[in-house]
Image (cartoon, rainbow, N blue to C red; front, side):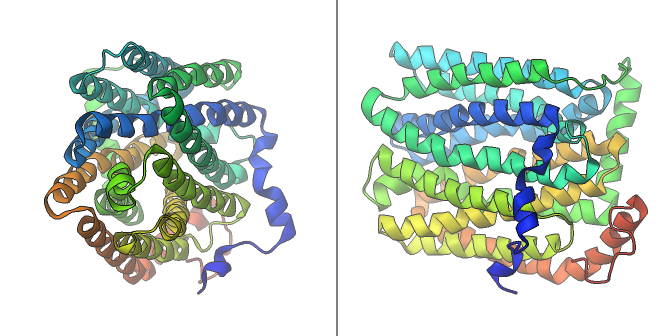
Length: 435
């Protein structure tokens, strides 16, 4: 199978890339998130550059990555229970307001030259705490924003398009803004950008789920039910474990990019912006490829192929000392990363039962965003000891191994996933070559 084989060649499929935008609620969400995500990526770049400028330490880059996401690892399974019990839209409104206040706080500290490293650590922990409640609600809300259930895969892919379109635009703007005005302006613009998504969420109209009084015993029972459902299901368990492994070893290369830009490529903040934009360009194309798909067939092949391609890209980055070659490598890194993550997300959402989707997606968030801080801290620690190139080489090789492992287990997963899709009526009369 070649890379081109995963690109849809049907003009109607390409034309249907934005089919989920026919749903009013999802269109509002898409617009608000698109604006807000640009600000979020500006903050991400400004944060990493600020930390590295203040400390010059790759270990602290890893530490900040750890503190900003470790609360998701601890709290996401519990917040998933709340997501299944309460109105997901209300949860998202509250988390977006909290994100805005967090961004505004750090903006004021930087603009008034009061910022210290401990401020960044504390505010990163607060960011992680908010994310722990935002991520499960965000992931499980999407299906309730679309009018047609068959548009779920398209909506998930367009979520990735929002995220990665912003990854393309935000870092480039941030690199120039930091060089011209300093990091503070990026944090301020991010705070302002949350106004767009808050307004969009307030205009969304969906049926409100009946509130359920949370009793401690019932809460524990609900958590236990979600845990058992997630990890007793062979395909869900396999996908969650695979994603956790990638978060440990496949994705932490991103946290090393500020040091990579300065120490390996001998550049500055604009170099970091170029690298992130190259990665974002690949990721955006990947999201559009996934959005054009109209079937769940072939998701397993996409996952196996692109995890291996991601590992290869990280390996090649470890040998690069030239900006142009690095831009090409990180383009394919972003492409393969989003193709694999979006395919995993789509497969999980289509497999999971509606009444347990919030809890399943909380474990997805835990594996994707909660395990990443451990990988960030590990990568930062290793890089401070043996250097960035050797760290990237190790991470890349382990990622390739993960892709090969999934390929070897694909046949076993096929029989489980095939029966679930048939029972759900997603693909009646499914042929044997689903994956």
